[in-house]
Image (cartoon, each protein chain N blue to C red):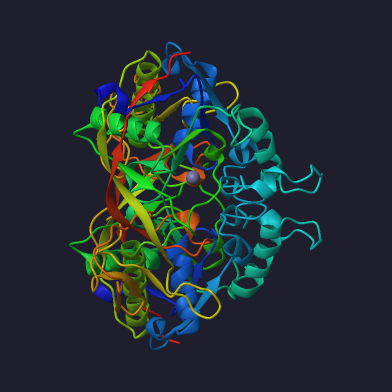
Length: 315
Length: 315
Ligand SMILES: [Zn+2]
Ligand SMILES: [Zn+2]
């Protein structure tokens, strides 16, 4: 077998969108996208059409996560095929519009790449969100970004999971990429978080330009954290939380957590310990928006994925 | 003049309220007050009636700062005397109810002390908010708390200002005390912030108990930061912000800022410097809720207040 025989030839990634404001109070992505809508020089690349886009303008206007329902859970087949009616929730109507503009989801006409920019109150640093372990274009892109950003850190969260995966705004594209950067309180713009997000997008677009120019990316491996289980706060029978994230866990996203180590602290000071099996790596620890989703954090497990060599297919 | 001649004899502080949820997404105060409503043992003191109270339950329910208008600006004479009508904003109606329960504001029947518990996204640590430099009861209480909490830090922000003072929920009481603790993202409960707030309230109640028992508090001085000027973000003609808090200022609440030092960073990296006169001490730096109030931070100036000796008056 020659070296070229093991290369996957993929279509060029000509149409790229950058989404901000999928959650209307996550200010770094909103500010970057609004800035690029005014002046897109910094996101132009040879052979790439890049479209910055505010996905939930009404939520952005109100500086709230959403108006009627979470847009980033709204891109289900059911919603996207629902008959247009006046009384659909705002975000469902908006999902249908976005699907027409950037999809249709799952079709050959869909955008090649969508970056969806998010912020979190969790201490997650720069996190790329990967939806499929077999998307070799994305595996190669994420590998490229991690190398480019070193010695700074950029983790990859793999959301492939039978129950915990959901229908994101970016899922309209052939290659969906989520970018979470934190910690940043919702409604606040922090310059360090803004610049970290901007730099990841820069490297991502550089990768796409190189790919479209015909550069071959060699086989490589990618360390990822695969979503494992969702952990809720301890609650009373009325659903009110009765414990806080333990100070030993707070802000320790991506650090190993072992059975017997504390995860929650009751108001009387007693600890509740992790009772799972083996070492896990918690993330999204104490994210503001996840109280209503009954999630204090998610556990992940480390895994190494193999990325095939890729190269642009000849037209 | 004998030593007793210089003592101010004040009425005992029998009726004390602790307000949480004046802003419905500031979770430490809300959680503490709800906890104390269920079980108030920890806030009981001899000779003191302490009432924990959620001031804006609808906003707490929705985990939002307010429903119609900011409750913590609503206690104006105009609002409190407005005829009850169905179409008053929710928070104005609520202010009237609170004024009946804990006031009337300015009357002899008003509560003696109200603590109003707030959180901020700013890196302010524990901050006591003092509304009047001539409230010697509060001066003595804040001095007591600062000593009790040392070597940890608890600053005093004096909001006495011809333009920047506003009509707070706590202003219903004879002795209003605001407590701001941060940094904590809105909608998030952090155990370190929760415990810091709990400890300040403990010392405050201890002070009141000692005062009511007849202990004399000696003359002392109190270092405060007096609100000086409100600084907005640089904005374009549409009101959109065009710069961020500078990384050299971000999280540096209470640290000296001198003319010529950077306060904002434009998106192209250029800095905007402070152009005021003399050294100031910024605070409420990059508080989420103040974007809509056109405030990036407030400057303060240091001042030392003299507190008179106080003692409970004999009945
Ligand atoms: Zn988000
Ligand atoms: Zn507040």
